[in-house]
Structure formats: structure tokens, C-alpha cells
Length: 465
View 1 (tube, one colour):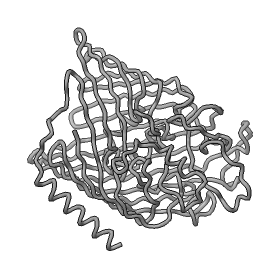
View 2: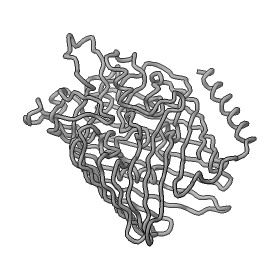
View 3: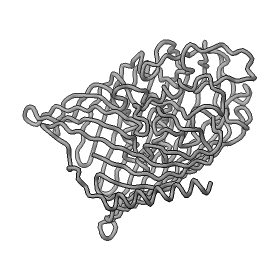
View 4: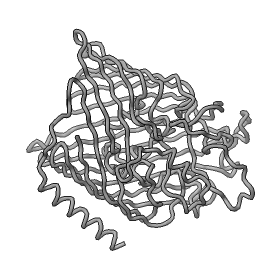
């Protein structure tokens, strides 16, 4: 372990020396004729006391927190990693005036792993581990980024400051967009549950954090903003049925508050699969293991900014999301990225989750940022049917299956911003999952008791253009 800390310290000193001496040759904006090219490269080094080896396709390469798909921790991990603070990406924005106060607008963006050159492909990370025994897999998890050429957003439309903006294409869910504003760790993979997992942004299903075949309308002024989002669903997009979302927000001086509602039908939930030597001769899956759910969430998010001497600021963040997951009758369709799924494991079930978070960010005029966040999830003792045809549900304890559980995470980051193009960071994240939410980890009792914890240290740097 001492060697790992030494490697972290050496890397931090090397990055600091290099960046402190570097000039800033990049222009403020790479814009020509209303078209802007932008991007981020985020790389670093991570140490985890419990984890699994990195995967070249998974966003960020590592399972940064104990809230994972694999339940697969096999030992300590010390490795080069990526996208600790922000998904590495490249994209194009368009804003071209056409008539009066109307403009054509659009965006295409994709995330990639700079340590491998691969487009981020979480579904691919699960597929590459299929059939491997627990404890012998590499990092893998579900996501809405599944190797699509544009795995973030891809949309176009029209915008007017007086009438609002309407766009059609692939959009972030409204809650995912709101979380980017109200998460103290700004959706960091390595230091934020809200960033690492699309569970909250997808109203309980991470594949539903981005909606294909969707129409979005938004309007804003300095005191009020409104957004509506509708999707007709897609048979190859991870959200098989229609979905609707609404976001209403107000801003009054240093205070801003948003309320977000989302309803999704036919959301795909991939599950890591492995050969269980105690299962005899399990029936082989024809695709990736999955179940389909109908999800509903209600969220309230807030931020307050304190102005401090010397133009420093301190932002306080808090949020709450209530998520309801229910059995869905959808049986046809594929995951994000058109990955084939097998929903034969589908069960008639319902569960409630409550997600809370709070944190603060100190922003100094010198460029120093100090950020702390705390995240908590509780899962109820849910009901489960004994089949897929709507049979009467029973309590999970009576069925001997997944019962109530909790997840905790606390993180702290020091981030020094040299200018708008370069910054260096170092941080630590501790997370623990217990009881029903820890189901499947080695050493836990099936669905009733046990826990798994993880500590992650990471240092890194970002280049933005």
C-alpha cells in the first residue's frame, strides 16, 4: 500500500510542476461560423483498497464506488485511470442566427476513454465479462453510454430568447441535467454517486439517463426556467416505451431551486452475469441478462451561494429524489447501443428508493476549489411476485430474497484551476453498501445481511478546449 501512495505523490508532484510551468496556448473558444468544437481529456492515477481491474470500455475504466453491478470486488487496485472528475469527451455545438431572434441550434457529443482510445461502452464492458466467475471479472456496469458514435447527446432544433428552445434527437434526461447543477461534485465519476451511476438521473434505471427519439422544450429568464421532455421510446435504445419529464425552477438572488418529475415505461436494467458453480447447469442466456421496469421519480434540488471576501464564493448543495420501480410487461427490445438482451429472468416486483445528498464547494479567486459531498440511498423491503404473469406479490423477507438496504458515500476533493483550460485534482471517496443493496457480494447472506465498503484515492488533471 505504501508503494501506491508513493506513486500517487510522485504523479501529483510531476503534474503540478508541468502545469505550473506551462503557458496557456489554447484560444478561449474554437468557434467558426457559429460552430464550436469543444472537448475534455481527464486522466490520472487511482488506488482502491477493494475493487476489480480496469476495463478499457467502461466509462472511467474503474468501478469507483461500492454501488456496482458486478458485486465482484477481488482485492486492491492500483492503476492509471480516466475521467475521475469529468467524462472525457469531444463535441460540436451549433448556434446560427436565421431570422429575427431565432437561431438554429444543435449539439453532438461523445465520451471516450483516453487511456485506451475506445468510445465509452458500458454494455460492452458487461458483454466482455459474461460467463466469467465472480472475482475474475474486470470492471463493468450498466450505463446509457454503450458504444454509440454519439453516446452523450445528439439533437437539433430552433431557439429564441423570447419563445424558448425546441430540439429533437437524443437528450439527457431532465433530472440528469439538473444534477449537473445541484451535485456538489458536479457528476464526478470518482467522487460522486450521482455521477458514477446514472441510477438517479435515470429515475432508477441508468440506461434511462439519456432518451432517444425525444422532443425537448425549454424556456428561461433570470428568475424562472421550465423544461419538458417526451420520448416515444426505442426498441434498440434502452427505453422501450414512452417517457415524460418536467422541470420547473426558480432563481432568487443567491438561491436556486428545481423540482423535477420523470415517468419512464420499459426501462432496461442490465445485470452482470457469471457462472455460479453451485447452480448446476444454468440455462445459457441468448443475450445480456436484464430486467425491464417502469420507473417514476420526484425530485427537489437546491443551491445557495455565499459571497465571501476577495471575490471567493461558497456554494451549498442539497437534494432529494424519491424513486419507484415497478414490473414492466415489455418483453421485446434491446439495450442502449442495440445490445441484445435476455429478459427471461424478469420478475414481478416493485421497490422504492430514497436518495439524499448534501455538500459544499469553496471557490477561491486564486483558482483553488475545495469540495465535499455526502450521498445516501435507502431501499425499502420490497415485494416480489413468484412469476412474470402478475401473480400476487409477497414480502421479500418471506421470499428469502432482496430486502431493505442502504448505501453511504462521503468524498472530498482539492481541485486547483490554473485557467479555463487546465486544472489538477486530488481526492478521496469512501462508500459502503449494506444488506439488501449489498446482495450478491461475497460474504453477504442472500438478500438479508452483510456489507461491502470501498475507499478510492485518485489524483489527476484535465485539459479542456
